Image 1 (cartoon, rainbow, N blue to C red):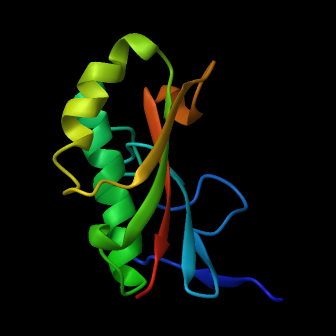
Image 2: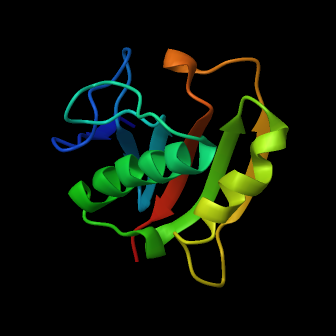
Length: 127
């Protein structure tokens, strides 16, 4: 099956050779987004909560440009550079979804592009 990429003209430019998202049937697999401001291409300033909000804003742009919304998200993977930031990330995270919440995995990583503190990827499903 050929890859059917979903490009977001409003999302930040890719930092490498990857698609913003790829369709597989009714599922949309979104590449991880860091807290890059699409207008400047620069990492936003602020703490991990502010960076989490920007990462979600970027993911929301990709979802909307693919005809989906945050209500269509079924799975999130969150990558933090420090698990001490979990509570702050979670504070931002809980404002983006309503119950029942998507499944989620959160892991600590050694580093992220542009020295971001958080990166988030998602899987969504078209109804």
